[in-house]
Image (tube, rainbow, N blue to C red; front, side, top):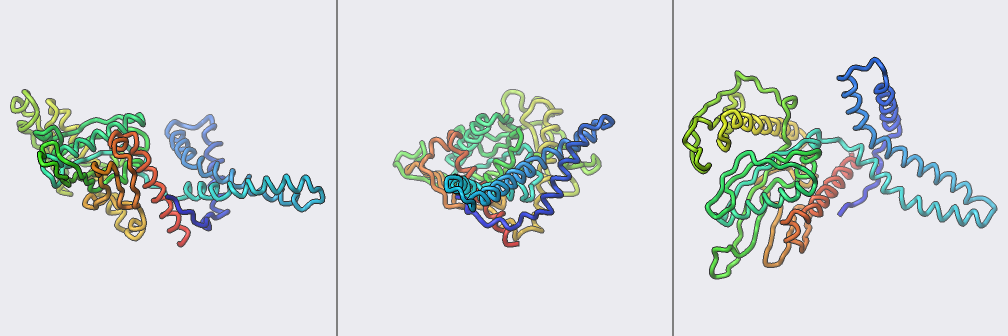
Length: 365
C-alpha cells in the first residue's frame, strides 16, 4: 500500500538542532531546582523529540557502518572483502526503511492525534435497515476499542424500534484514539438482505460517521456569558424517569450558534456536563476546520478530508467483502471487520496511504 519516495527533505542542520534541543531537555529534567510545571513541559518536549532523535541516530549509525565496510571492501584480503560486501548489502536493504522512519517522525504533527475522540453515528438512507447498520457500526467500534484497551462511553442515543440507532454519540477515551479513528469519518454503505425482506432482495442502506477530537478545557475556553442554558422536562425514549423531572439540558453557544441537547441522564448536572463535553468538542473541531481551510491543497492530497458526506466504504454481505473506496482496498473479511478484530488492517492501510501522500508532498516541496 505504501509507495516509497526519495527522502530528500531531511536537513542535517535541522537534525542537529533537534538533537541539541533533545539533549538540553534531557539535562534540564535532572536540574534540582526545576519546578513541577517546568518539568512537565520539558518531559513533554523530550517525549516528542525522542522518536526523531532515535531514528536520526540509527540512520547515522547505518551510514557510518556502510562507510567503514566500504573501506574494508576495497582492501587486499579476499575473505574480508567478501564479508564486508555481504554486510553492505544487508545495510543497504535497511537504509530505505530507516530513512522513511525518520521522515515520518519529521512530518508535521496533528496536535489532535493524541486526543480521545467523539464518535457520532447517524442512520442515513434506508429506514430501519440503516438504523440497524448504525448499530452494527457502533458495535464494530466498541469491539475495536475494547481490543485496544480504550474506554467507550455513550453520551446520547436515539434507539430505533428494530433495535438499531437513529443516532448515537459516544466518547472513546484513550491515548491516540483520534489518530486511529480519524479516517472513519464519512458515509458507510451496506448492501445486504434485510431481516424484514421476505423476497430475499438486496437493499442498499447507509450511515454517516463523524469522528471529532475530544477537546479538553485547556483546548477551548468557553465564557459563561456566551452560553444560554435551558432546563426542561425530558421527552421521548428514556424509560420510567422521562417526564418526571426537569433534567434535560439545552445549551446554546451564542457566538457560533451551536446548540447541544442532552437528556439521557436522570441528573440535570450530568446532562449539563455531557452537553458541555459535546459543545467543547464541536467548537474545537470548528477551529480545526478553519485552520485546515488554509491548507486545502494539502488536505486534498491526503486520504480523507473528514467530510461526512463523502462515501468512503461499502460493506457487501452477499460477497463477504469490505471495500474502502478512497484507496481502492477490498478485503474479503467482512465478518472479522464488523467484529472489530479485522478493522485494524483497514485503518493501517489508510494510515500508510496518508503517510505516503504527505511524504510525497514534502518531497516535492
